[in-house]
Length: 478
Image (cartoon, rainbow, N blue to C red; front, side, top):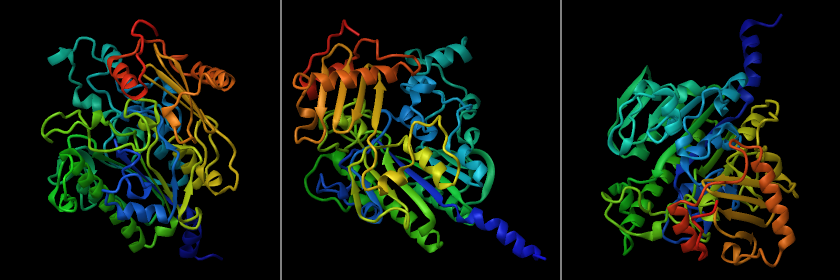
């Protein structure tokens, strides 16, 4: 007969063998803003550089949108967010009927935690949702409607499969556990201190409390997104003459780096380092705003001090600067250490990768792929990535990228050339252009709403395409 304790151990063994999964998402971090990217020399990111040295640095890592809410929806569902009618922030909230990574992992025995910025609930810009759910609500300044807190909370992480959550951006959080890891009744909690350090503290509290069984941790840091902070313990590292906002961004990035280092050290301390899959990326590229410097307490929507070097464009654009982001993947024993991969990968892939790591069957509804096979293959299969945002549409297939904004010309770029998006090759390769445009339009027909963008370019798009591509978009044409 098998003794009862031994039986329990045998039953628990398959569960314990499943890897922990941690996704660290930054907010408005530019492609250039890790020292290991080799683009800028003023950074201090030793722990993220260590992360990259122990795993794979993907130089062609992408997000699904150049804006935070739709990008987060794509990451957590593993589907192009337009399949569920989400193009931009006003299309929120993300419906609770959608299946997110923590819900996918629940049958495999995972506990799930979320710490940091959520941004998938209804907000005052969600006119369609407000018209349906709050048709008689009074309007405040600028015609905005205040969403009752109870209605916002109905779309928070606890409604999407997260067992533990410490949700918030700065100072005020909605949480069901304390910074020391103790359970508490769900509700508001005020925490003082530098927001990145607080979010790291909460993440570590979750890890320490759940490391005995497989866990999934989603850590979307609210940084270096504005409003910028300049904590002395990090800012002291950055001396010399530089823009005020760049110094603050470097300080915040150093805070993220310090937090990642604490996480790596804690995984080693707990003996789970070799059994943890980690991903580090950003929700979109940096909002460069012409690198306009200004005091930190003004211009809240301005430059966050990050950079997208060497790529063209910025947050809000489907140019590389808006959608190509830092992307690190680390899983000791499963992925090679110190590898640099130029294979196109996407935040869409994290759901499929998590399912495969948890030994769950592939879900045909997902648009992403399991990253482990392609990042370890000698010759991974070709793939195409698609984007649609505001009045722009794009596809990347291999080295070629097609880009179109309403009222503007067709762009065709060779992303592997030294000129990348600085030279339009549409006239030189009409056949390739036509093929990519057809594929892009065919994919767009499957989305909600269907088809390529039909609106007229907005003011920001007009400004961006003039600045980066020297093209004047026709405001009268869709």
